[in-house]
Length: 111
Length: 115
Image (cartoon, rainbow over all chains, first blue to last red; front, side, top):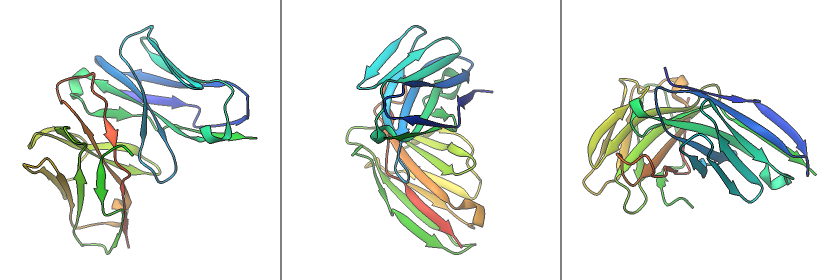
């Protein structure tokens, strides 16, 4: 069964304190791995798509990396506005193009 | 703004009732996906339509049904509602169902509260 596990469930950082969020996945075949940001009561906002091991993508203070079993979302020098829930999802070959989501990591950044 | 429009934003209804949630995908997108998000379950895939036809089914209950119309908007029908159906329902859309490179964009959701 295709599965996505994110850790930690919650993460508290001080402004400027860099860290990483983990997404472990088990899929029959990976079409793509997606990262989304979700603010409370809002829809998920697309951040990145990664397709193959070794691939990296960056956007402002965020950098996503992918291996054959997991993905990391690195947050460099975070600011309070980076506080949100970060969702990881996989698109599996056997499941068509629907996304299978992890439960997310809730990030709180204090100044 | 993702370009995916959902109505209504909030809905309160009683147990046993039926509601319809509506979604307009981004311009040019042929695929529509429906997801349910509750506090304990996270985002759960319900169903996908591509150009008017059902393409994939996830954890959708038999009390729920969906369709996609010729103008590509979609509706999710929830019937015989139970307290446990209270959740945030998201619609998402993408350009091409067969292309794994296309991004899936989400709407702002419809909050359903069953009392």
